[in-house]
Amino acid sequence: MNPVAALTCDGIFFCACRGLRHYDGMISVVIPTLNAERQLPRCFDSLIAAAVRGVVREVIVADGGSADATLEIADAAGAHIVQATKSRSLQLAAGAAIAKSDWLLFLHPDTALEQGWEAEVESFIGQSAIEQPRAAVFRFALEDFGAPARRAEAKAHARTVLFALPYGDQGLLLPKRLYQKIGGYRTLAGMEDADIVRRIGRRRLVGLRSRAINIARPHNGTLRGAALTLLHTLRVPSRVLARF
Image (cartoon, rainbow, N blue to C red; front, side, top):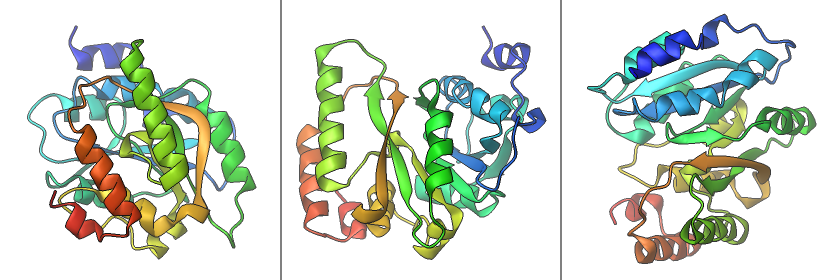
């Protein structure tokens, strides 16, 4: 089925959602895209309940020049669209620049948040202190039932807990004021997720219980990933790490 037609028939319109409650902590979700027509509807589906509840105020798609139906899907869903370059860091920065909410949630298009995530996030936001802003990431999960997927999830959890180095696939939730204070996403050829969590710092980073479920894909860079984790721990500059 045409993904745009399926989305329209389901009546998914973020701009038309009127939340059941209104509070200062509503979220702007920023999704960087490049030819993401197959992944985007699944990501959008996981945001609908939060939009109805009033936790998500707007969804922003920052596109790097998609040649497929990505922009049609985003438009049909009522998402705001901002044009950017193919650089993911610049896409994320462009989306954040037009966000209207006090909180930002950066989410990859192939990531879907598990059902009920909005209740935990609402609680996290409600307990956040203005004088001590904190950021949060979701628990990494893969949409696969095999043992390799469980091992990958365990490694991601250890990486998050031991090194305060979550994957970009885990999403990143933080107050806009904290995002601006640390300088937002910097222009990098890669490792933009590691760069921003390093500037957030371990003490301000919280791991949520809700899962960010990602589409399973082959991982052939285990050694590279381990090496980058070690170099990150040793405080090697992110601009250097992006060259690897």
